[in-house]
Image 1 (cartoon, rainbow, N blue to C red):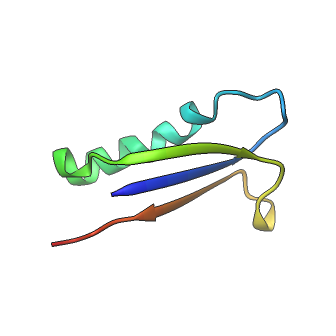
Image 2 (tube, one colour; image 1 turned 180 degrees about the horizontal axis):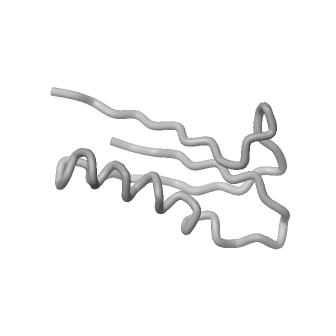
Length: 62
């Protein structure tokens, strides 16, 4: 399992990982220990449709 978090922000904002923590917490609540994952959190100038955060997830179910 892997998530990529994209945060629309100004160049001086540095707390991207804190913003993406909510997605990580949600995966833990849903999947428990099986929700352990790798992730990255990136700042971007803009996202489609003016959204503030975009989460891209790759999840394998067995």
